[in-house]
Length: 185
Figure (tube, rainbow, N blue to C red):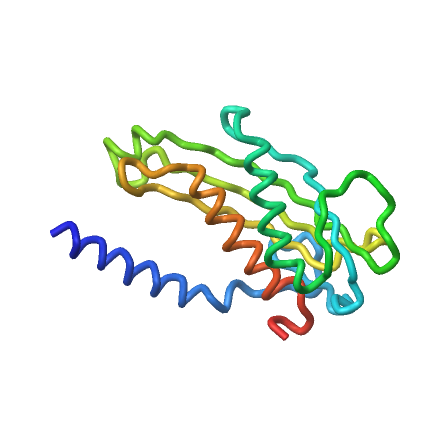
């Protein structure tokens, strides 16, 4: 019975991800929209990227360093091939052919016990993130703001898994749809 349930969840997850592949509509007029890409942005001219953590918070003020390191590594993996070296912003001036990715991240670890004992979304872990890619002059090239959740897993799941999964999934999405022009090209 458990195997059947696992296979059903696996197939449903794959179908949901396949349906989401195209993603939401991307605005080209309002930089404050949740998914925005500047139509005049020249992503191909960017030769380096600095990642700036503007605000990173967790529900219990623990694990901030893990969240930052996980997102930095994901940016290096997925954005490095597009922009060249990806480093942590240390406050230096951004080179003319460089860009900065500002990240705002809020993680709610949820309750593992509630996920395990109650289920059905109780104790859900959540992550809200905001990516803003700016050129050296401070112009917004693209913006992505979204939220993701995790509500289960074996023995209530591990909320740190949400951070790893979300950082990989959404940075990969940002690279594919928000940091290329035209989209996906």
